[in-house]
Amino acid sequence: MNVVHKIENWGDTHHPMVLDIIRIALGIFLMLKGFAFLDNSTYLKDMIEDQSVVYIPTALLMTAVYYVIFAHLVGGVLIAMGTLTRFACIIQIPIVIAAVFMTDFFTSAINTMAWPSITALILLVIFTVIGSGPLSLDRYLSKWEVV
Image (cartoon, rainbow, N blue to C red):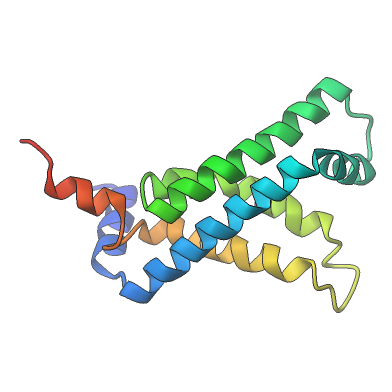
């Protein structure tokens, strides 16, 4: 049995019910963040442009903006419902790592914008390891699996 299967089995057997509530809250938070970016995509574009050291072509920049919006919307729904949770978390992790560095966490001692990103990053890593849990669509559908 390889390492990925061992981690998956460990995550499936060590999953308290309260983590499902946290997973659902994380999914809703990411989905709401996606709606906020969708509502004001120029803010996200300007934020990415301000952080870039090198020139980024407009087409590539807008692709990144819409990737972030799509990943937050779809990933948030998948995480909240508990289906494809590990995949959705892996898709979210690079975006949230970039968000941590964009908030200038390391340059200011007290930065209120950094803490939601850091918390989301920690939770995404945790749910990548432990999976969706008992209150999830994956668990519900596995009961109806036809052999």
